[in-house]
Structures are given as C-alpha cells and as structure tokens.
Length: 284
Image (cartoon, rainbow, N blue to C red; front, side):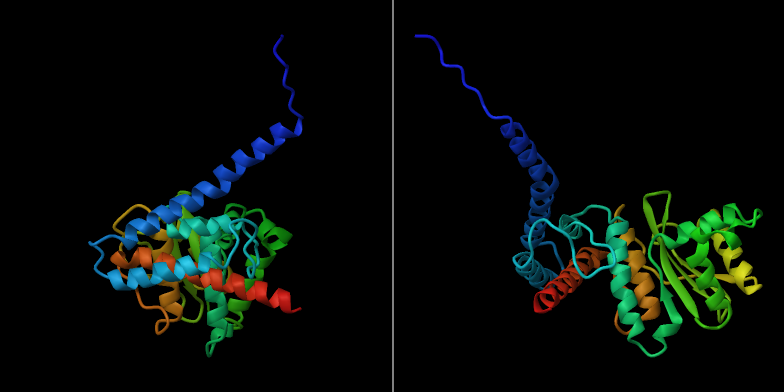
C-alpha cells in the first residue's frame, strides 16, 4: 500500500506567518518586560524596595486592564500598545515614549496659573528649527508652510503672547536633551544628563531661532538635571528636568537611582490616560 500524500490548504502558511509575527512583535516584548519586573520585584539590593514592589503591583493590575495589542488611546498619536512594554524594560526610550510624557506634561501645565503662557512642544519641534537654520539665507523659513508652526510659536513668544517654550531634543540619534527657551528673560536653558557642555550645533540653532524672532541675543544657562549613571536614562531624566522646571512642586528632581521607578510611574500615567479615554468612548 503506497504512502498517502498529505496536502494542506494554502491558508496554513498565512496562519503560521501571523503566529510567528505575533510572537515576535507582541509576545516577546511583553515577556521581556515581565521578566524585568520580576527581577526588580525580587531584588534585595533595591534601597526603595517597598516603593518598587508597590509600583510593580500597580503595573500588573494596570496590565490586567488593557489588551496586549491594539493602539494606545487618549493621545494625539495612537501608538501600538506594545510600546508600553518598553517603560517596564531597560530599553532606551524613543520619541514614542517621550511624546507621550510631553503630552501629559502639557496638559498639567495648562491647568496651572499662567500655564497658558507656556508651550510644551513634541520631539519633532527642534527638527523644524534645525531645518529653518539650514535654509536661513534662502527665505524659505519665512515662506514655506512646512515651518508654519515654528514661525507661529516664535511670533507669539516674541509678541509677549507666551513666555517660554520647552521641548526635548534627540542629539546624535541616541541621546535626549531638555531645552527651555525663555523669551521674557532672554535665556536659553539646556539640560544634558550626560554632557556638561551642550552640543555646539544645538546652541547655534537655538541662538539663531530666538534671535530671529526676538531680535535679542539670549544668554545660555544650564537647566537643572540629574546626571545619568548608565547609557539609557537620558529619556527619563531629560523629561524630569523639563517637568521640574515648569512644575517644581509636582515634579521633584529625581535621583539617578530612582530612574527605573520613574519609568514605571510614567507607565502608570500613560495607562491611566488610555483607560480614561477607553471608558469615555464606551459612555458616548
């Protein structure tokens, strides 16, 4: 009796391709995050063990309330939910995470007295300033719609309709730096958790943009910031420096040893914003 030839339907290939993709894109990031949380939960070296364990318990509860895929709600850009796993890991925080933190800060600042005079911009803002500087001689900065937002903010600040603008800058594609431009005091504040001397190109662009709109030469000062003790903490520390500058009573300047807990606290804030938006959509 000859062997029976087995034939499988074509959809089987598609099915297993999807399974492999799900494992790589969703399961593995969440597994790495859980492994990191468990190591921290069981670490006896943690000086703030009680605080850490409380945060981790809240994180597990938060994770039980959200799906492991889909999009994050409640933010101007709906990023994949799996990006949340990086907050609970030791991975470098990307513009996805920095923009989520900045958006939450923007909302808090607006609720404070005088908060309407402060502008918190996303991580893409500096790119417009940098490109404007590069074409400063051609007149494109004044004419192109591409620079409309940067021009508008510059005009408002110079006209006294705002006082300060704060944002984060990704330098060398691997390091976050905090920047505050104070148009009332004509001061540039730069907070760099790694380099005591800010990048020359960054300073040049900021000096051009502020002078272009205000007609004043701004003085440069250092923004208070915690020095990082590893290669990945700049994302949290630069945001913390910015938040501490604008809301010092709400955000204390964190210590280098508190960075991991700071990431978990941000994660909780982002998840809560997501859940609030999901509940609101269900009520409508």
